[in-house]
Image (cartoon, rainbow, N blue to C red; front, side, top):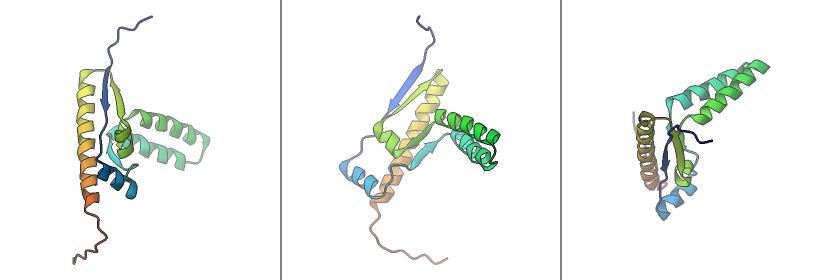
Amino acid sequence: MMSTKVIFALDARIDLAPEEKQLMQLYKLGSLTVYSSENAKKHAGAVAGNLATGNLWGTAKAAVSAGMMALSLRCTLDSLTRGQHIECNDMSELLAAESAIVEACNTAKAYLQAAQTFNGQEEVYEI
């Protein structure tokens, strides 16, 4: 049986220069979140709140929230270097996902540029 439903897919992957890969490993930047949708943030908060209740119902609700969080868009440097696959139900979701990926890539670039400036030098700021 074939479905007539159209699904839009977006695949994104960043290619890092060898120096950038080295910086990512040196400073352990792979798990760094470079984009998290509002839904992912909301569900992460719900997981913590439901687990804090300490009862069985709270734990069950936390499991549901964790599942919903997994369906929301969250990008890390590792996930972008491995490749991120996103499926969307309509064109507006696809455009929003594309915008999110561009934002994630810009954030990743900013983190890697900042990592290039680390040289162990101490800086003191007077306030």
